[in-house]
Every structure is written in structure tokens, then in C-alpha cells.
Length: 150
Length: 472
Image 1 (cartoon, rainbow over the protein chains, first blue to last red):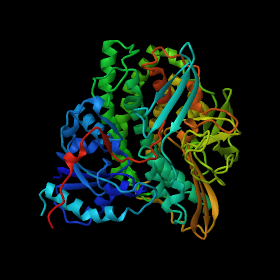
Image 2: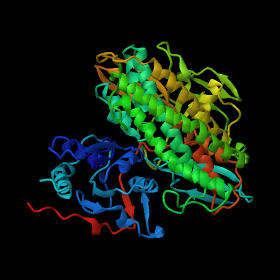
Image 3: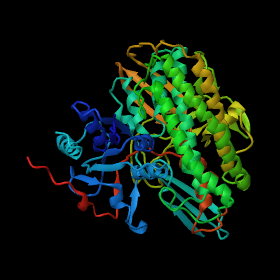
Image 4: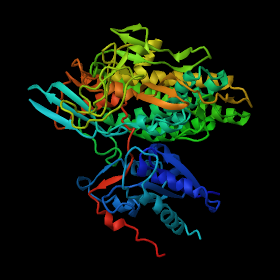
């Protein structure tokens, strides 16, 4: 029975923005426990709602621009940022948090963890930057550690 | 005289900024719609194998990936002088039709409705304006409850589409040559079962809700009218001879006329491009020039016979004759509903025509040279891909999306775009909460999503969330 899903979000046409998808592609080559499902969510964030209803644990991998060093890996949970007052917080394109809210409205409360990776460049290119490519093994290690996979 | 700037407009895909100027009576006398995202996916396709375009262009957008894949496949098929088998065309209809149903429900309940219904004050309902909520408490509650019901139905429509597309959001099997799926009896029965539940929702709940909205806000039949020029490229092949469920056509002064794609020209006088202005997309190019004097948007201005035209469900239903009462905010919602019913009923016809065990795909190889045009309709309006092939590689590619038509800027002759025109003349009752503007813009279901989805949380100290490098 699958109870955990890893969803990659992003646009592979826009260089480092596609990191989430590239991580999923790499994970497809790995041997993972049968309880784990992998999904290429592309740019259709709102269409991932169903996964939040069906799985106990949802891992999101996405590009996250917060201004620190390119390649920085962030780990956030929706509850980490929900208490920020509205006037101090404007989140553009963080649709994934809306999806979490929608799932909650439907009485589903999966554990959600977002791994965000700081991009170096977002421009039209199917190839990611060197620094982003070099980070993929580390991102995969971190995800495996999170899921206690050896 | 004062101005209102809404930036970004929330509850739509992508980034759209609206800037209006008001006179002393708070009536809009000028409007500018700005797409804040540079869109140049076309150049990425150059020198690639033509069939790759169907995979890549659907990545442009998270809402209309299916329509982009179909448009691209049709363009390449035209280069190869090939039309897919009826089985292939019907499979495309089933995938695209499921996407329409899912998208129209999303638009009505999850993007547009909150301009009229007071939801709980949590995101995504908040922030909302506190003005002009006219529904009774009981009706308001019903619609808020149906917002949640619609989430479940929309998910089912999405799963219905995935039965034959293999994988959604980004379908892997809509390719030049047809659809690489071999339907089983189980697939067909699963599709029918989803469709039955979804159809019940559309013909009962959605119908009651859109009618309720239209009766309480009937003044919106006179708001956001715009030019009244409508354009449809046609969609849903019902045979292999090009007959469409929604035929192509243009509407001017309420009369349907013949459409000819060679009358489409794109203008860049007020867009951040130095491309040649006034060219058909088959010969157009995309050369950015940010900061160009007099320009205010990344969208080009497509025009038909030099005039602005509105694309969308209302254009389709007017040309097909299914709904042609008027052009306004509420007419757009009614047309979208009318179309949803018609698509659901035709999905049921198409699924019964599907042959078990028969592939919808024919190998067509790679065309060596030529040009082709793939015209279809995304849920939010007319979509076209123009491709040229030389030495078996893409040598030119241009896309005009429906939002390029609707949210287009002023053209070189001084005609404003359809959304801009629809905003002009609107009286704003409270300039601090201009809900009228939001209702008008949302009625077009704009999507400038062809864009970056990077997360960028402002106002949060993100260094608290950095993962330290693992020991090596």
C-alpha cells in the first residue's frame, strides 16, 4: 500500500525552475520502497490536489527563490509559515500552499514537507546550471533521509 | 481624475496587472492590461525534431497543457499532410474534453465565484473585498459548500482525462500521428463511470449555481461588454473531414462570419518587442526589447482584419449557436456553463464510438520540410501554433494563446485590447475595493501562466529553513 508521494513541481523549459522534475526523473532510477509513489507535477500545481487526499505524507520538491546562495536547500512545512501575519507576507506563486488548504477543507490533513532549492538562473533553457545539476545527489540523499531510506 | 492599479490580479494563473484611470464620477476612462512575464518559448524549439514540440509546448502552461499538445501535433500533421484516424481524433476529444470540464469547473467555483460569495476568511478565499455581497446567507452557504464539492468533482474530471492520456498534467501520448493509447474495455467503462457522476454535478449543481449567480447579479449582463467581436478557431473533431463540434468563425455586430487565419496579424507597437509589427504568425518573430518607449506589456497584440477580437467559450457558443444572448461578464459565465453541458453530453457519445483494442496512432515519420498551422481551442479560447520545418528540424515556431487575444495591449492603430475595452466605461462604486474590475477580468478566465512557477516567499526569514550540507 502506497502511503507516501514525492511530487516534483516546476517548468523544465525554464532551466533551474525544473529542478523538481529533474529530481523525480533521477529518483525513478533508484530502488525505493514500494510504499512510495513519484509524480512529475509539471506546472499544474492545482492539479496535484488528489494526491493530498490519498496519501499520508506528501513531499514536494520545487525551485524556491529566497535570495540565499544558489543551490541552497530549504525545508519548510506549511505550518511553519501559516502564522505569519498577512501584512508581512506576500507569497507569489506559492500555489502549493493553496492546495494544502483545499485538502484541509476536504477534511484531509496529510503531512506535507516542501524541499525548495534556490535557483541560480531561470531563463529559457532545457539544461539546468552546473550548480543545480551538482545538487541533485544531495537533494536525493536528503529526501531519503527524511523518509528513512538507507 | 485618479488611477487604480491591481497588481497582481489574484485567482488567475500567472501574472496580470491592471491599471485604470477614473474620471471625477469614478468611471473608468482608460485601462491598461500588462502581462508581466516574458514569454519566448518559441525560440527554445528551433532546430529540434518537430514531434518534440508537442511534448515541450504543453509544458508552457499548467492549465491548458492538453490543448497545447493538440495544437502542436496538428501543426506538425499539417506539414506531413496527415490527418489522424477517427479513433485518434476521438481519443483526443476525450482527453481535451475532460480537461475542459475540469477547467471550467475550476474557473467558476475556484477562480471566479469568490468575487460574489463571501467565503471564510482564510486563503485562498482571503484576501477578498467586503463589498457587494448580495446573496442570502443560505445561498451563500450553499455556494461555499459547493466550492468544496467542486474540488472533488474537478479531481474526478482530471482522473477521467488521465485514463487515455496515460499521464496528466502533461500528457505523454498526444503526438503527431494521433494518440498512442490502446483503449481496453475496462478503460471505457471506467471513463463512463466518471462521466456519469460529473455530468450529474454539471446538470444539477453547476446549473443551479450559475443561474442563482446570474439572477442575483443580473446587472452584470450590462457590465464588461467590450467590443463584442468574437473569434473561434474551432475544436473537437467529430469526423476525419474537419467537422467540429464547435466550428470556427468570427462574430461582428452579432453576425457570424467566415474565419481565415491569414487575416491574423500581430502588432507590437505597445509591447516590449522589436519584432516586425503587423505580421502573420507564420512569418512573425519574437525579439525582446524591454523598456521600449510606449510599451507596457510582454503580450503582443493579435488582431483579425486589424480589429481586436475576444476569444473564449462565448465566442465558441455564439458561432455554434448554442448561446448568443449577449456579450458581458454574466454572458461569459453562462456560455461557459452551456458549453460544459454540451461537452459532457458529447463525451458520452464519443466514448461509445471508441473501439476496444484499436490504437489511435499512425506512425508518420518526420516531415522533411514545409509549414503547418495547428488551430484548436484551449478552454479559455482560441489557440494556434504555427510551425515551419526545414531539413527535418523546426526552423520557425510561433504560438498565439487565447490570453494573448483577450489581454492584448493597444495595437499600432490605437485600438485597446478586449479586456481593456471591457473595463472602460465601468463605474466603480468604491475605489478602495474595485470589485467590478476583478469581476470583469475574471470573466475572461485569463491565464498568463506560460510562466515561472518558482516559489518566492517574501517577508519570511528563509535562512531559518536552510538545510545544512550533509557530512561527506
